[in-house]
Amino acid sequence: MDGDMVQNNERVTIFDVAETAGVSISTVSRVMNGNYPVKQELRDRVNKAVAELGYTPDSVARGMKFKRRYAIGYVVSDITNRHFTIISKTIDDILGPLGYSLIVCSTDSNQEKEARAIKMLLSNRVDGLIINTSGKNDEYIASISKTLPVVLLHRRIASSEFSGDYIGSDNYQACAHLARHAFTMGHRDIGIITSDQSISTFRERTIGFVETLADLGAPVLPSRIIATPYTEEGGYKAIGTLLESHPELSLVMIMNNATTIGAIQYIREHGIAVPDSLSLLSFGEMLNANLMYFKPTYMTQKPLLVGKEVAAIMLDRLEDPTHAGREVVIEAQFEQGESVKDFSKQ
Image (cartoon, rainbow, N blue to C red):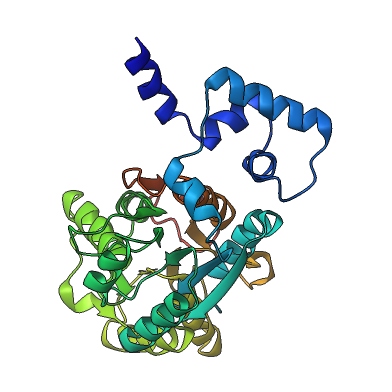
């Protein structure tokens, strides 16, 4: 009996306490650590929940608490991408009140730049790393995850030795949905602008879109698929190349929001009417879409929710560095715009 009780108590987490007490995770953390003032009524609710659940912070985590620098490294491919900016602010809004500072490094998905950034953060003894990886330092990141909390953001690594956590979007299913939308709207001459297929996000999105169209009987010709750097400049050049070589295209699917912005710039400069002359689909946030000269149709990755989940996972990992790695996949949301022409009734 006692053994069973201990086993159950070990599974109780800070999230269980927060839910039982009806407070936020940060409030529970403040009460447990005693590092910020908390209203007595909230403190009583937390302490009552702790007693009811038999919650005891992990002994390893308690030992680590006194060695913490209260700093988290945030390594992303492109901090100018509004998606990552929103995520970083959301994480900081949650971790900041707990005393943590977020150290941001932008790598341009460059292998050497990413490795330097990680080494710098480790030399500053950060308490954890949140990494949107280039996909080129997999074994290095996997080795770090054995001794430090690591949360992978959106991009997986190809290493069975990775011991951290992952959070990302349902890339395959989201792009399968966009493919079905294009097909339902009557499009058959479809082009794709993607990027480096060694990066898991682009690989999953491209496969999801291509395989779904093939299953529907509308395969995309390989010559209509172009890979480009996922930047505005890359999108600008790629859509120009694609349309010059394939003027018959009725729709172009773009696998990244920054690339889409560049493509839209090209389209506008060349007087291409959307959707009458060309239809567009996109994956990723099209922030300020209401300010564009047309309303885009795209999949949003819900950056606010992603940021909250990343912060929660990191806090949980900091509290108990020994728990098994987890994978959180957030369903992307379809945003219906006016950038896809309906040929289905013609």
